[in-house]
Length: 196
Image (cartoon, rainbow, N blue to C red):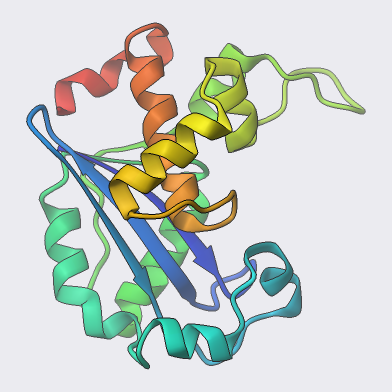
């Protein structure tokens, strides 16, 4: 089983995860989950990106923090053969911190970073230096021919509603669609086939 995930956070350096979305894919079925978490504080710069204030998160989460969902999240992650995200080091840094707070340990047996593994595929030039830059998730989707309409339709199917970039549900669906398109057409993704 492949688990695709995205997080929205309270800031850039481990504060807290305020939203966690993931999609679990096997050969037979696909299941999507989304969690909002009550947090202590959201940096204004982070709120400008994802739109979630501490007050709104309190309401969306019904006052529940990450620890309230730990056993479910831990079970799903432990059952994954591979965890895929776009900028894995960022997401994993926050997940490790959240698990630590709950006296647990975040373990990913296998992982795949769609950002780092597609630099040579997308070949997006850096502005002020030689070489290629890390593609943003939207740039990877554009390169692979995954449109916002495709993502909106799949978001509605998997999560029951439409969202936009920087909502973890939308970004997780975008990642899921991009990787599935890439698996069948680009060698950068073929290693993932064994995990389905």
